[in-house]
Image 1 (tube, one colour):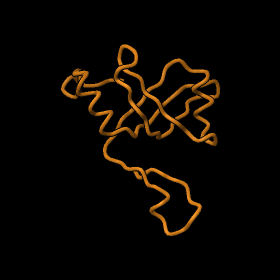
Image 2 (cartoon, rainbow, N blue to C red):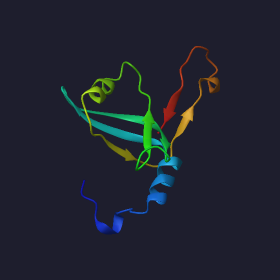
Image 3 (spheres, one colour):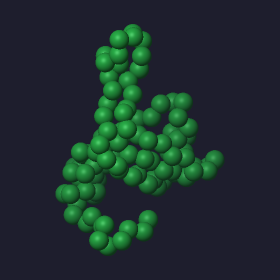
Length: 101
């Protein structure tokens, strides 16, 4: 991805902090059926691997999980503020959690 030098963030600690503060990101994968994208909350483990490790969970109904199995590279774009919405916040029972972005 082209990034103009004045927008480039090369400080590893600053990148790690950005990911920790804004864990909701767009994941892009090319699978056998084409390109799949999804907005996904990530957990970042800076101590695993050379650059750290990203972990995420997607719903089984989301087709991107099939692309993960056939792909060895992913693009993940971290954006700004967002928040988890607990089903406890609703007055109606039986609702699932979601993400406000």
